[in-house]
Amino acid sequence: MSSVATWPSQAETWLDERGKGAWIAAMVLGFIFFWPVGLALLAYMIWSKRMFSGKCASKRATYKSRHSFRTSGNMAFDSYKAETLRRLEEEQDAFEAFLQRLREAKDKAEFDQFMDDRAKRAKEVKDEDEDKTVEA
Image (cartoon, rainbow, N blue to C red; front, side):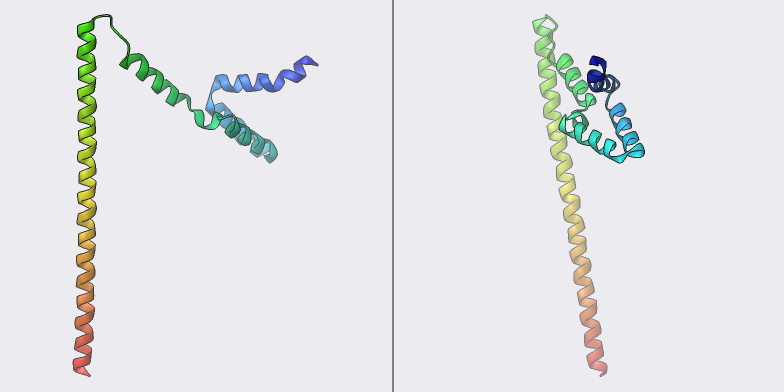
């Protein structure tokens, strides 16, 4: 009877070892064969935060923390590395600000073009209305 009581935890462990794709496949199969099972798996995945935890994000964070802040043991190299990383972050911030200014300039140019077209159409409609009143 103990093996029956532990099969849900064994299934959970088995799916966890295979990652988020296995959980999603189990949920889809649950929906296909008996929809309440799929719905229960979806609810469990959301409740247990398996749906949004993402091993990829944690791998990226682990890689960044392992390689960005790892000391080499040489103070000169570590200070050079810290200075280079700081400079690169400043350049990235400057580039992102530049891209933002470009987007704003493009938006302004598009808006100005829209307003010019709108004014031109309004003038054409006004001229047509004047022509119709003169003819009548």
